[in-house]
Image 1: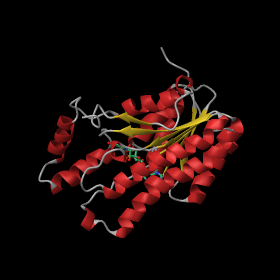
Image 2: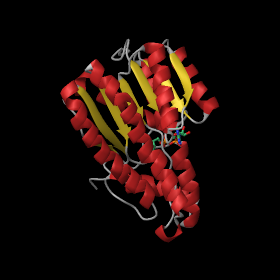
Image 3: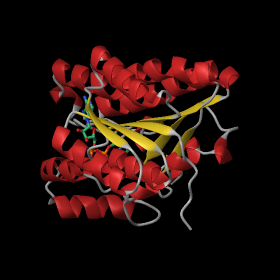
Image 4: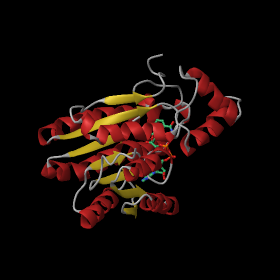
Length: 261
Ligand SMILES: NC(=O)c1ccc[n+]([C@@H]2O[C@H](COP(=O)([O-])OP(=O)(O)OC[C@H]3O[C@@H](n4cnc5c(N)ncnc54)[C@H](O)[C@@H]3O)[C@@H](O)[C@H]2O)c1
């Protein structure tokens, strides 16, 4: 049975060109939402929007650099011009740039924080007043298991993802009187381009092939496998649905048991 939980609703998805963001965009489209796809990779982003339209909804691809306040503002304005409301924000755009602490140039720290943390702040700030005015809405910010725990050689990533959890709690407090929610999702290793690239880079630093590194991460997980992007999108959709209206300010692990182990 096809659920239509988001019929007549509007979802903004950042990072929609690839991986988890792409899976979220198509999930919301499958369930009836009109979708604004935001990303810096224009061609792939347009492909995601086209995939959404094939599912029978309206969808637009908007070039948006989430680290740029003007770019975020313009994308949210374009969404409002088109549909006049924003019911869901999924802030999934992000990068990974791990290296041992002594080897992290300041520019690398700054760039990652700009995209992963300031980008989420800017997107939340742009949609919050709309949701307050509507007296409804759901924000889902993509943190990570590395927001709750840490590995070596991931200082800036871990800091950004922990920051998202704190930011989301504060946004949740501000939205609560308006019946709108904000939660973060903390995925474990999920099979996307990001993880495949990390596997190549980190694997070679640790003397492994990408395949060996991915297998090691799967073996570390109680469920003995990585997540698929649709498994993250399903939880995101739940957090935007009526079934989760009393859940706010939470950071939900979707990690096959990694953190508890
Ligand atoms: N894959 C994982 O294992 C994993 C685990 C935990 C958390 N996450 C988080 O999930 C989110 C999605 O990651 P993914 O694995 O799908 O990665 P991905 O690389 O497949 O997708 C990330 C997307 O973000 C976009 N993006 C990057 N910089 C941007 C910017 N400045 N403005 C707009 N868009 C930008 C990219 O173009 C890309 O389309 C990220 O926030 C990531 O940190 C991923």
